[in-house]
Image (cartoon, rainbow, N blue to C red; front, side, top):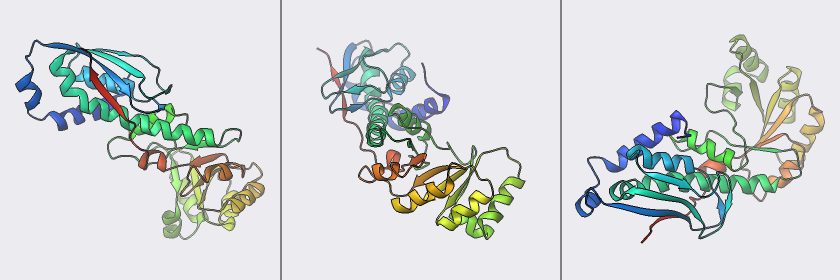
Length: 277
């Protein structure tokens, strides 16, 4: 199975959470030797993500389940389209159904919303990024779904990048003090600094910071930040970005736009698993 260890671990926990001591309904109705075929169907238009995770759910429960995707990851699909054909022991297919659809629905919902943001900034240089506002325990799946939708991942966690935000700056006393302390730790990690004002931006630039987060700035201020920066650092816009505002933000000339809504507010994509007579 083409699935990361992190997502596979999420799948095992999800199955254990749902099944517990056993599927009381299915096990009492369906004979152990019974077999069936079924199909996973899109109930709306959108972008598919999580087919590999869906397959892993079925095959983690029962390695003999045959799962055959009918579309590619990241593909656009329409309502009523068959996404996968599944066959195997009836008990296995029915017991794994909800967990499988939960992964597919959540990941496809994130991918669908991400694609909308990516298309909204088409023609600009802005790249859509996710954030750490993911479902607890599901970060690997959420961030993979963003990539399937055409976005890119920001830092995965607190360990793979230094992002000096307002509370760090306030605690240290200044941007200069915070950056100095971060660099003295010699982590080798990229350093990004949050700027709440244009004076913050100038201070960060004077320190040679290569990536600066423009926090909740109006588009006019972002455009001025781009002019002041003049290519000396990469600029990331952040703060309550919506589909209605993202184009104006992109047109200021920023390099990145981080959108928490991709993972904390995406609507679950509607999918179903139907028995084939």
